[in-house]
Length: 259
Image (cartoon, rainbow, N blue to C red; front, side, top):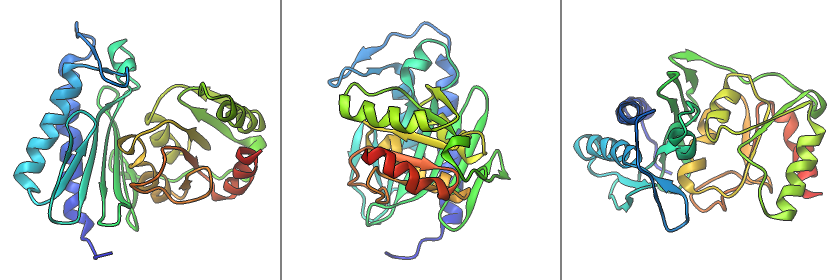
């Protein structure tokens, strides 16, 4: 992997989140018509405008980089770096007036490994930025995951229980082993985990733009992120994630997922 100066790239990522958040705010709690995409998930003008705003910045400031966005797909680059954009993660929450959707931004290296991540909630104005070897900040201040050595003391969170029976059973085993469970929130939960409010986040059925920011943000705050087999996430990961704030929770959680 070629060495990358993350400082200027973090500044670009920050500007991307600001631009996407401004587009989302213009339409939040306003009459918005949603269309169903091929996978039956909703998309609105807010999603499209937010992604377009980010792409305009990248075209101007980083024209040699690749871009992969939820709404407009992939644009190849020549630098070896690829920006991954989810303009509104939690479109259903956005459409129903709930301020727990987020803008997700990440940057992959030439091997497909996430280098940095941004999770931004533009209504509440929570922004987490994390990068390998740099650390994670919330609204500019360094954050740290919570110390929690045992699952029995842990707070578990996930977006929803999957329909797949085997995966739902794995969710139940891990959730039942924890002290409390919370549901809903999409990528917002991962930012809150970096700030020490949640100990275990378990997700499945994701696309690259959903999970790419997780590892830089959680691991930058002291946690650990892998798939359900304990493998680090990258471009080729299947879309499942286990995020723990305290790395001591990782092996016990994996054992429960395996049944």
